[in-house]
Length: 466
Image (tube, rainbow, N blue to C red; front, top):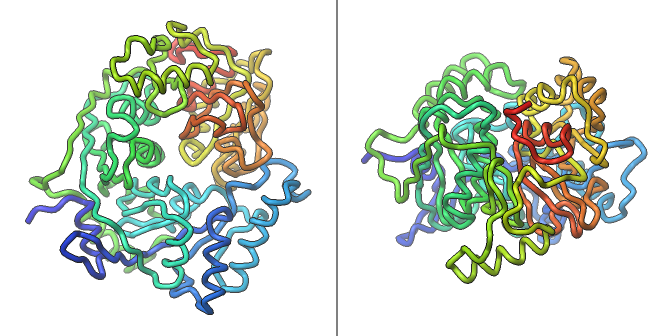
């Protein structure tokens, strides 16, 4: 029977499955951070258990870590205790970890692919919802909760409810300066934040087949914001070329054997999906969120919508609340929205491709006077080193940006990089919920080139005009 990529991965890892579809999946790679793991390790210790397969686990602190003056330590007591607990647990249980002083340290969803820890055909879990990122390499990857982390540590397996396959076909040629981030926001705008709930979304189409691995990771990263449990992209030559020579990828005969298997990781031609969405990439403009949900999105040339035009009463109420929080009025042109801060970073858009694109925009310009702070935070120490070798750091510094160490940074208000109440930020991160970047902070999600152009102009502009 023809199978989707998701079904192939599921079937290969199902240790047991009952008649309802509930399955026990074997987990190949377990990524661990400092925020969701302390209770799981403590539960393991209380039960006098050890990790079933320590070699499958890789840990790094990323959410709470400072992105400047790192050698001075972590000021926040709670954050420091979480990082110290992760280091202590990993040392005690002999789990591999990248400490803050390790040049390979960074955001887990950036570090694992660039090192070759993420490989096609794997099942990958992490106590972080954006684990879907790794599906860009043909892996079945999803976020889990703390009790599930303990279960995987103890058994190397996880009970998973049935998931249905869904396909998003992105066809055509994206316009100038229209990125994977714009396509992802457009998809969420089209189907809503619940449009893919209960599904494993496979991205296909000629627009996807031409994307770099970095862009594919952005797509799969944002799949969770459409409600999906999983984002997936089939393995092709671009995937294999990306993995070639990665430090921890297979070598020699193991590489050749792996590649032969990886070439089977695609949906069969006549495989059946439970849901299908088609997007014409050529019709998509640069996108900007205006509200407090990733589905509240407009074209850069558009305007803030009027809730009174919405027939759905629940949506109308949500829109009105969002506009109150965001301090915006219906009908305001997106290009009239001025900003206080700009953030380029996060597991969505902090890879070398993203930094190069943003640097191209800001080169020869300077951050506008009304921008109180403009941050560039690489996704990993290796990305930072590569950017510095290419001189990107100097471009940003000369333009008035701050160049930081790797970490989650201003993606979420769990470290010293955060918004103050009522501050408005153009952000390349993945969520614009109330208080996401700091209590009372107002977040607008955009691509790296749109964030860079906004920093230069002090407000949202069409990057294509620069």
